[in-house]
Image (cartoon, rainbow, N blue to C red; front, side, top):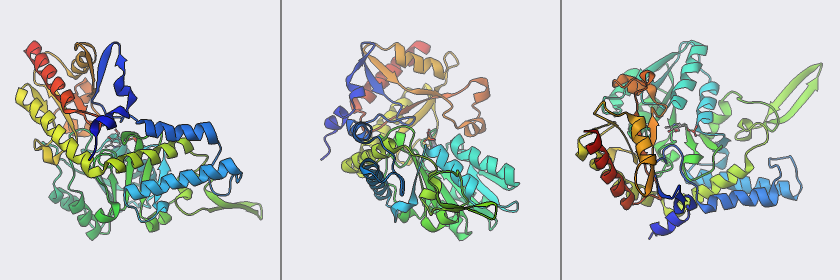
Length: 421
Ligand SMILES: Cc1ncc(COP(=O)(O)O)c(C=O)c1O
């Protein structure tokens, strides 16, 4: 049985009084807090190693141990998502870099198209937009429904035999929508298209089994999964990774750089090192390994079950007030653990709400994000104009939150709604 009070104690940020107030952290969809175990793993690197890793580099004791521990972290990440081999795990700076990497390196020609959705985070949308502009390929957009859901039939309509890539967000950071991933993957594969899924908001909260869903590439954001900042993961099926073009080149990605007949001839390493140019974030890798160990120990099923109970309460509590428009599906079972909402009244806007909850509540600071969550296209689609400063407030949950925090939030939101009436 998971002792959730003990889990919470692993996050000292939550034990402090900030400006004399207790913190209620409802911003984990932006960045999750980090448990002691993660910084201890990183501290070990910085305190006792501090050297460079990587095959064939510094073979002294500190370098060898760094290489051994970082490859161990790669193994842990592979097991976290059930990849067939650790060689399918590429360390990136974040999910954004992974998406840029695949968008730039999957061979794509003018007569082919890329299918994505209006619900994408800009990090999932713009790399493919940019590549299509460069190649002259068509970017086809599946429009999410008004309630933020994605319909497989709409993918079926857009995907054809000229579709090279289908890329979409598995769990939306704006609406909480969980995409019909398996159906879309099946449709894409029937047309021999490659599927890229953005797992930044899914993998930290639910079990992701890349082999079971048969996705070709996906990205993870380690800082949203209790891990350190500045590190992410790109997963790809090994045979497909081998076929991608080079991305960043330089040191550490080469087997040899021959100089012959006045010419330079590089011979590149196979994946994953093919994509990890230059010295890496070794401390971050150790932190990432510790983060997924931490989540695995809790059990992803336990994480998901608890979050679903909490997000149901949060969603239904906000809806009951009848003062706020909620984005995304209204059935908690179809959602990730976050709720984006905005006041129906014009008297206040999203920024007023987050400021009020940060500053004005007695005894607590309730920390939420306001704005557009880097998903402008879908907001334009449903009539919210980011260009005019319109936006939403997002409350997002994770393993350290409690039902009591949700109760406090809902009481305060009700008080706030009375004030703006
Ligand atoms: C759905 C989604 N995709 C991609 C990203 C980008 O993640 P990263 O910060 O790791 O680049 C985010 C971050 O908020 C996200 O929510």
